[in-house]
Length: 318
Ligand code: ADP
Ligand code: MG
Image 1 (tube, rainbow, N blue to C red):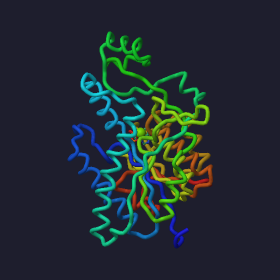
Image 2: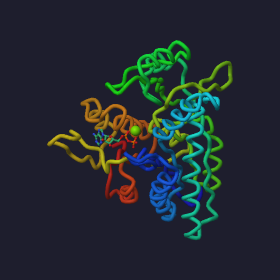
Image 3: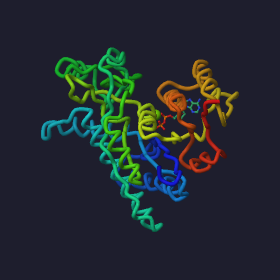
Image 4: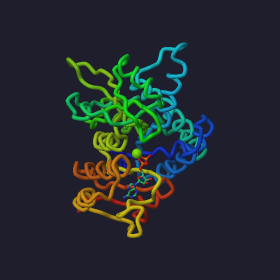
């Protein structure tokens, strides 16, 4: 591999693209993505890393589902997994354009930046399919929800007093289908954006790939991607600068480093909330157990410091 550079997979959290309370206009998202790309550009600039980027898509796919719903009489609504593909294109464009412009400003315009529409294979016998639990898309009245259940076979559920919503399975990612293409781009020195939103979930049926309406956790899919591109470092950037014990209590304590065994122990003791920090720690543990050098969980503004061991939470084997 090129000049001893390490490959790093960076998983961007929702905040890197859309801040809470924002409407989600293109201009708002571009401003956030610009700030994010400044940090990515610092990593590239250091000359030490080949950078692969993945990202969440919750608010973007939520908006696409709302648009589908509102416009269903005039334009054919797309399945959820197609909305996932659309969001990969949208977010990929914002990163490609911002990062490309920043690199060009630094005289590094020759570095290609490319997004790969990424399918992620899941197992159709994954237990998640028997227990759809991840709420997606618009809120409905009970009556509307029950109608969708009959007409479209949706699974619907009342969501914490806020109304009814569709729930979909969240299966474990097994394989990044486009891994060979992604690897070739990385070897050709491109900065690759892949597996956005946890990837487009597909199952194998009679040797063919078929899209399924499900949502894959983006941190767990990011870990698969990191293993598949032979990354040394898997970095999860979120809205907290480090993982904490006893989070949000008077006994809260920053974890600067933890071993895989310590991480598993803390997870078992319930320190990491399901659906937010728990999948990040699980992904970090899987990456190191699969032979990765280290995983880092931190915030965007601490990313460069965390790579030098001066911030964030680092997870290693021992
Ligand atoms: P992302 O969009 O980056 O995936 P999430 O909201 O899914 O963000 O996960 C990050 C959140 O995890 C933090 O904002 C924090 O509130 C929450 N969290 C839960 N448990 C912990 C913990 N033990 N230490 C730090 N943050 C935690
Ligand atoms: Mg999350």
